[in-house]
Image (tube, rainbow, N blue to C red):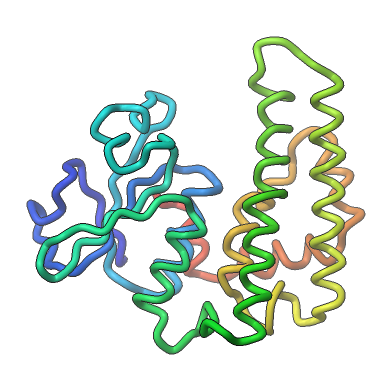
Length: 231
């Protein structure tokens, strides 16, 4: 398996040879995005688990390269051992695609029609689907006090966005968001919609057959199955 786990922030101590990517990540939808692309590409990569339940992502050493204190982050160690830090999951995905997906199996060449569609649906997730579903999770399951207005507001907006995605899949007609195969556009949304057996969503999701079949299709990809176990 191409993933190598490290418990020190210097992967050379376990034999890593530059250049290589080191992901600071955790078992969340945003964390799984980068694991999916790395596994699909079959590259050797290193994983430093950042347990967000212990607020490791807020420790001073982490904030030095990720001022927002979120996962995932990427430390890309160049041949000369200089390090390029990239934060925000979508930015990491495009960086890794540019570095390793030279045949553009899972991404598109900048300037092409498909590239801009890929950007569009990546931003759709980053600005809409992820934040709205995340807020619904927080207010419905983790907030110290229940706020029904907030719960309903974010739930309804989550459903609306799932409906937008369902329509896109219907229009594209290939079973994927852009073109006819899995790309970054799919990778960003899939982890956020993989688990739909939450509250009333497990019934309401049935209204979106294109999304359901898309989830099932991607779930069967062996590299995706591996990625969903990392870390």
